[in-house]
Image (tube, rainbow, N blue to C red; front, side, top):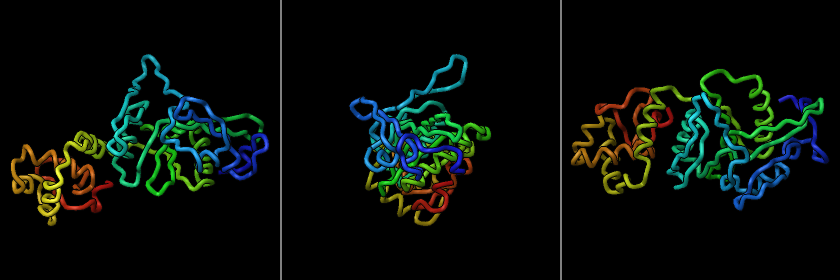
Length: 258
């Protein structure tokens, strides 16, 4: 990022962590304004509500809604189908322990004096305590408007040891496969004894249906296997359509993050 693109607000220091202000709504509903560095280090943004609602524009094909997170057991808001896909990917990521929709807005002053602000679409908390700010690029190229804001967000994230990325949708086949498996993400599909048997049954890669038949009644077994594929206890090549003879192996392997 070109540091000359913006300058300090008020008495903030020159480094990026102190350079930006952060606006957020705390868990009790009060709006707060603090230095970004202080917020990143001391505020559980994953517990905060949206700082900016997602606009609903008549005639536009946006689909705001709620995603039940298997990671947290709570609902996560999303503003569009593209955003929903990214929430799904975060929910499956074993390094993610929580996520939130637009919990923070960062503001800064451009070199010519204009005050700018941006609220990344999603935030995630990693199991090591670090964080992620994420914007969804949609299906086209990144606009010049978002590209400039992305430079600032990347610098802000680096300053506090976080990550930032602009995420494009996965390949359609991968998205469709994960969408199917996400239907079995709920713990009600977890059968510990059966999943342990599945790991043994697929210790050597083999077709899904063959292992399922060896484990018992396929009507009972297949939902558990789909849950295991969601969690990573089993893996399959997600870049090709799932079917009864798809090759399944124990463990996440190289296919789990396809």
